[in-house]
Length: 208
Image 1 (cartoon, one colour):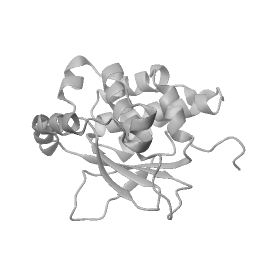
Image 2 (cartoon, rainbow, N blue to C red):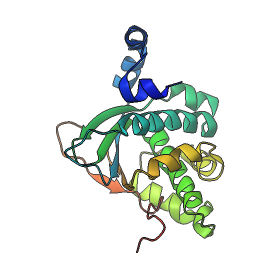
Image 3 (cartoon, helix red, strand yellow):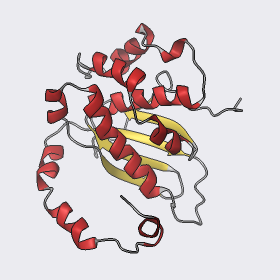
């Protein structure tokens, strides 16, 4: 568990252990390299350009940890075993934009879990909390490469995902926009991004 001094100052951080774990994880590199990856883009407001990204580790580890837990809670064991982790792709300095690369089904299921968490975060219980055909139609129309198994994972993520508190904390950092690339990620072309507003509403209490 990360301690206060380790997070804020690097005190007591076991760099040898960190590098040892990195060097032993080449299998994950190969798994990701062989996967079809999509871009997940999170846009936060309120990151001053003259200051460091103090919340970088918290945001990064929340995405990585909850992404794993979505897979573990919402996918069948075989789908969990075949799914690759999500990894950071880029952070645009001063923009509040964090980009990650992951496989389509777990990325979309994570977005749905975030949508379910946003409903509870805003403490509003209404019809959009429930699984409905309009959301599934949105997924089919915008992400035709998503698998049929996504439906069950979608329902699980929307209704039962347990790590809502961690997602709430991330939303409190002024998370304002969530997008997913419509096609597999390519460095040779600009990304065609889909704003997933129909799946997740991020307006805070008091917003117009």
